[in-house]
Length: 93
Image (cartoon, rainbow, N blue to C red; front, side):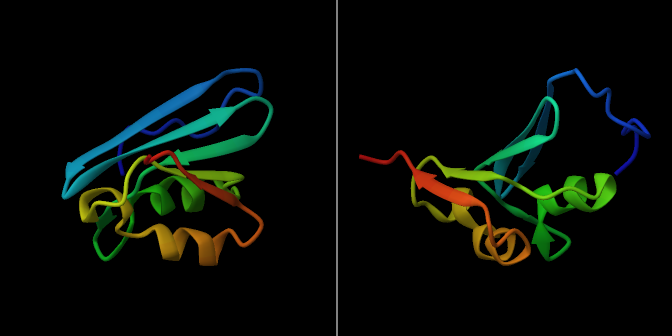
């Protein structure tokens, strides 16, 4: 990915909107270092959010699946494997 800042400001909220692809993903960095990922899709055979987590060397704390359609959950299992302490929630009724 290009255009990403080298370091994140310690007291700033960051919102990354990834996509469109076959789906979209939103990743939030909540100060000081809490990461939340909403939905997932794959880009170059890996979850799009992994580009951020690897770039900044961070672990995801929470994963939210808005609903169980393929364009929203593709890559969720890989995110959970890479972030085994992350909690996951689904808001689909």
